[in-house]
Length: 443
Image (tube, rainbow, N blue to C red):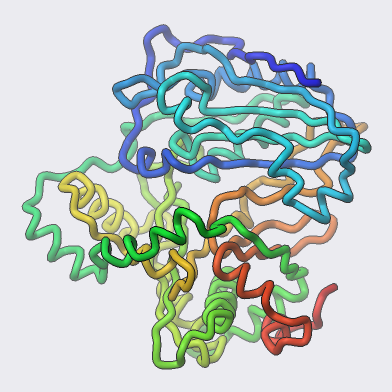
């Protein structure tokens, strides 16, 4: 049995107000973010509904509906909140097999969201044998991972009686396109090292994109704090004495992914790395709500190179884009908007290299610094924090994910072609030794 309620904002927004979608939102319309928090305690659903109603006053687009003009009408129709029972499931079962979640909650209906017949946010609380599972689906068109996971974190703060942080819903903050001649834009793209989208390569991969198991996943591959420290120390060189944890992880897993697919030594393997634009663009503050992520081309590498060599180049490539604000990143975002406005298919990386059954690049998305485990629906006397948080189910090939706080460190998940290749490796395969080369293997 299940019950579904429509949760509306306590303080309805101004009548007639809307939230327009920009290009960065529209390209994400086919994607849905799923967040899954597993608790050892039974959640108080009335408390969650009341606090959600309070928080939706700050996020009126989640309680609204899409319009034909491509904007979200702040009509406060409400967010579906479902309560259901699954006594046959336990928290240890779900922790051991994340695939159990796939059948627990229906996926957010993307086409109904697009047509304004369904909310862009969907919440389900499933009471299991020894606790509860909170599942939140959110349309990627209305927000990226930063927006999505901060929303649930702020929800838990409100549930504790604390005020929600002030957020900024202002689509006018996005970079505006300029009126520049198409030929000049193409030259700028070439000069920046961008690549023209290869439609032919994408067409060749259509069978895989349609029928391949793009979301097949392996993980977690656990790196405790001491392992991260050992990996970073191993990556440091005279050329790059200030290598960061993320530089070392990106370099290490780029090499491992190239080796997984038996990439020939004479063939380049590339990195495509997702960056959060907040604060790195002066006009997008930390509390900006919406889509503010961008993929940059990392370094090229060969599978037989050393960790130090690849980490040094990764560090050098990433550093200018990580400054706050970042002039190179600001320039790339402006170029991207200009190209999109002219419908010119040039990108910082070639998507065809990271798609398909045999990618020649690693698409890396890190969620390590988001407040994913800071969710607490309890009180100071009786906290209700998650036992585990299952990573989103998007087909990101390489995901860095925070491990539970009582463990610390990082979990790494491989998806799609990399996951299938890893599943085919025997336990005594040398690849596993390469994975844990810089620290003792963790069970």
